[in-house]
Image (cartoon, rainbow, N blue to C red; front, top):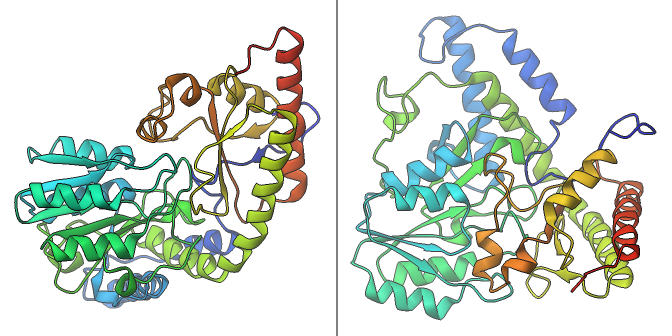
Length: 381
């Protein structure tokens, strides 16, 4: 945090969102109650009621039946459980999937096929269909609704239709899309839709899988048979209550995405005007309104992140889910960008607390770094 700032400017919502005040109140209230949701006495029934009310709220966010919502510890477990639980013969994932899907696929001992994407970051549907023709029958397709690094939105309903035509199941990681675009599990045609609380202003450490009514799911965690036998272990009551409250707030706030889109476009316009070599990654695709991935060739991403941190501004270089490792983004590589471009990228992501003054402060801090680099001889391009 800089000396002249009371609080940091937070522009890293795709990593995690600040917890909404109403969520803090809901979680605090839940933590003041006692009761195991599996107990039959009054306190247990009260805890069970709180879990089921939250389940109904998550279901409403994606237009699903409450009984088809299974709570777990977060998006990573949810995606792992879907890839494992579908008991598919093979896996077809896009080349830009989140690390949790990539790693789960590689650890599955199943044949794994990766569907390429265009330079825009959108999956090539003809290539996906070709892979489905080659893969053993009974495959599972996994494609994220919106990319965590670029914000590129995928044609999920079309992908689901292609998967269904080939007798494949379909998993969609909707962690970044939830609360930013409308989601309807029936219209999308997914068998498994995975969500994470902390991306929408809820607590960390809680997520969900939303299943279609006929989707198979072999349990990843066994024991007491909670969550209709699909995921054992005492439910995280307070976290689930907070997740439900965040889901209601996030749904109500979707119209605010139009405001964030204007802020994103303002920022990108300022940077392009000042730095002619700036590359807006995925600009040709439909993107989440809150996400901007920008590369300044010759200005390393980690250098920019450190500069902003010292200025009291929080952003990311690529995904925040890589244990602090500095590495070239597999997403940008899959989109055809060179290592030189990929290593120069940063991700700026907005949310419900972001204001125009935050965006302007970001630009001024970035401009000072760019101008200093230019005065030292540049090397951009």
